[in-house]
Length: 438
Image (cartoon, rainbow, N blue to C red; front, side, top):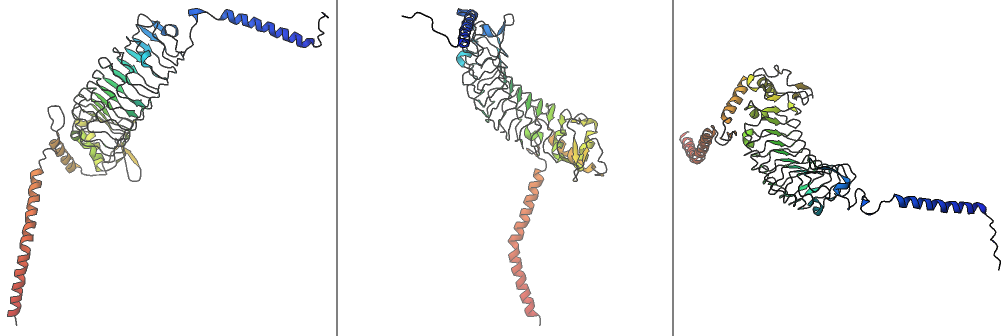
């Protein structure tokens, strides 16, 4: 038997192979030493095993868990933050809110979920958070606000932020039982229509924002029963008309904004149910061209009207608006700021600012002024709630109108009744005269 070593013909290959094996062993040893064992292994951000205590910063004094900007894809368990009242989860990549995970944060009062990728809120998601006051879920991908989503928070929830989502549908009982809610922000969504009584249970709401949606129509009972509402904002929608009685019963309403819509005309305030206590009415950037529709809103000199950006015609009505603006009683009524200048437009497209005189356009507006003043006097009475009472309810000209109509009807009846007999008698007389004549 030959025990001699085999002859190696390729020494370069052997050196390369031994070096490779040696380096591999060194790397393996280093990796083994660097990996912690047991409970010291921290879960990666986004894993289901992560806890609030090891991925968030917890302030025990303020009971505040700062989990924002951590790259989270899941809501961490409450371990380490069990007593938190402020849970900040904004600016992460969270896609859903499992109710079984949320309910661990039983003491939370403010929950920040903005700037995530949340696309669904399930009914009963917050059902175990009986202390929740502020729910902030703006800048996400929500499309639906389902019925029952806030069940369990009826006694505590005060402020709801759902702005800057993609909401199309709101369930007609989405806000059911939320009598403590005072603030709802639904700005910057894709809402085309609202269920008629979707806000019927938020009876203590003070501020409601529906700006920059796709609303085209409002039901007259849309805000019925919201006696505490102070601010209503409907800017940036596609509303073309406001139904009569829309603001009836809104006894605390102080500011209304309907700017940047498609209003061509607007009903008189007493028909809309708009109370005298309103301080601000914003109608800028609509499609109103006839100044006369604004005159009823000059009844109350305490209102501040924003009318700029409407294509008003340069006519006698606009001149009269200028003249009333210069009077003491209406000096503070109309805002003439340069941001949305109030102006009129001639047929050739030339525009003229409200501050530029149109005195040569109509030489005598005294008669028309007197007519409008009389209209104001007829329409300007108020009821016990400070609402203007409609002149259409009991107009002074109604008896005269009825008497005139009845008189005309009687004359026509007489003519129709006696015309034929008189004509027949006349023909007989003519025939007899013809016989007598030679």
